[in-house]
Length: 313
Image (cartoon, rainbow, N blue to C red; front, top):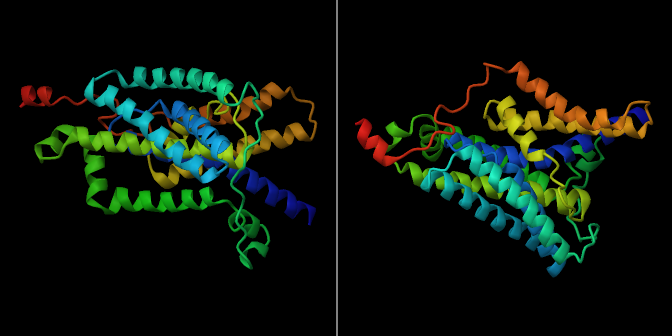
């Protein structure tokens, strides 16, 4: 029985740690499938975490916090799209700039909002217990005693698979990411599709930050995203830009992080710095194993200019 409890607790912890990564990876997928490199996932995560915490702190309503996170994440996505699609700024530079600004700005604003306290307790989103199904061993607590954001994530994964591979919009999105010149020749607006994709990317990534703040920790602290946006990018590559594959990669990274936390709790004679490094090392090894095998969208990171299209024609 103890072994079953341990396995159940471990799987739940793995799932909970994977949820913010999966939201960010899902958001990054929309952006990168359209051809816009999104290194800004880290900044979108921390923006969503802060905005949800601030809104919940002032209103006492975590659902308003989630709504504010969506709005803030969408605005960050809009900024990234404006710089990359309209101004033709290098997409890597734009993403890194957003990450730096988001980290500094949220730290500054958090000290103003929370009066210098980094552990201001917030009302959070509690798990939903589904009667009957919640009593199933292992699977009951894993799948039927979760919060709304987990069920929302599962729904969004299914919706994304349907949109990408079974709708005309999904075909348009993938065409813009693979060969924007051909998409433009067919009468599609490359800029409009990329703007929409990057804004959706910001909204989804910000939900990962809201999950960190309102579900897992229930307070905001500076730098709490802790590189999760970059791990989401690794999961995106590891999953070959597919919704299901990237989600499974996020669960692998979440399971690794849950493992290192349990090893620390057992008091193993291992320097904790090596244990903290374990999830990132697994992500690195996963990417090394995919060298040359994971093929990104062909136009990823390449700005599209209608003037250049005319010149080429």
